[in-house]
Image (cartoon, rainbow, N blue to C red; front, side, top):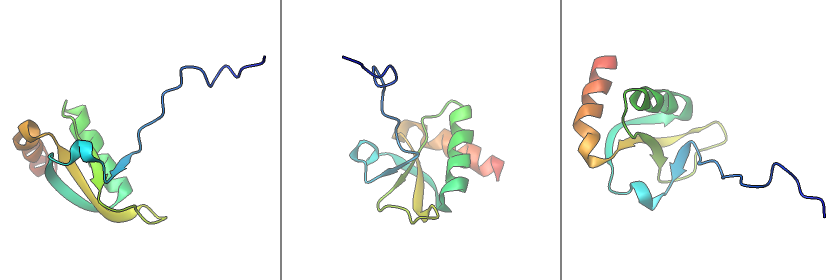
Length: 89
């Protein structure tokens, strides 16, 4: 039996913007964005500073990556995340 080498042990990649994900339901919103590219750039900045930031949306984005996107962090990290966002503006 021939098995594909790349199928073994492969972990599915998490989407860049979580849609209606209950895991981040109680997380705090740091900022909102209308397009995915900007939201991901801000998420990456917070992650580079050691925070557990993710982008989330209640509804799927359109084909151009636009919609209501929330940059969220766990409740204990909101103060630090907000400070970083305000100083990077």
